[in-house]
Length: 294
Image (cartoon, rainbow, N blue to C red; front, side, top):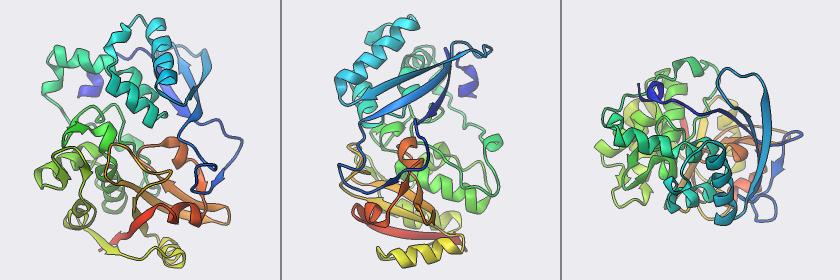
C-alpha cells in the first residue's frame, strides 16, 4: 500500500482553534478562507512531546513563509514546492500535511513507487453509525490526477459520493480514490480539469445503489429529509464555498440543530467543524439532492 511505503517526517493532527461551535452566515464578513490554523505536531512518530504552531494564510506570501519554515526544520529543499502547491495552500489552508508532504510524493514518483497505486484501507477509521468525514486532499489519494488536476484540488464531487456510499451502502472499499477512478472511467468529469459533472452526483451515485432526488433550495424540505436520516448533497456556487479549481464545488449537509446546520466540506476541515445558518448555505447553493437508501 502506497501510504505504508512513505516515511513520514512528522505526524500531524489538524484542528481549528475554536472555543465552541461557530454559527456562520455565508458572506465575506462572516467567514474568510484566510484563517488562523493551529497544528499540533510530534517531531517523530514515537515522541509524546508535542508543540502547537499557528499560522495565518491570507495570500501566497503567507503560504510560502509557512512552507519555507517547515522545509528549513525538516531539511527539505524549498524549491521542491512548486507554485501550484503554494496556490493550493492559499485555497485550502487546512491542507497542511498534504502541502508539506508534497516532496515525498515527488520522491515516490522518482523511485517508481507511484506507478502501482493500491487503494487504501480506511475500514478502521469508519463507524457504522456516523457519516465519515473524508477530504479530497488526503495524502492517500489527493496527489493523483483527476481529469487534468490533482484530486486534492478538484475532487469534491467524488469525495462527497464516497462519503455517502460508505455511509448508506456500508462498503468501505468505496473510498474517494475508488470513486475517482469510477468517475474517470464513466466520463463523469471534465477532462480539461474543470471538475466533476453533475451526472456523477446523480446517475453515478444511483448506479452504485443510492436513491437520488433533486429538490428545491428549501429549508423545510431539507430538514424533513435530515429528520429521517437522509443526506443532502449540494452544488455550491460563488461565495464562501466556491473553489477556484472547480466549476462548482460539492458539500454534504448531514444534520441540524437549534444552533445551525452541520456540513461536510471535502475541501475544508474548518468549514466542516462550523455550524451554518440556512441563509449562509442557501446564498451559495445551486442545487440540493437528497441521498437515501433505495
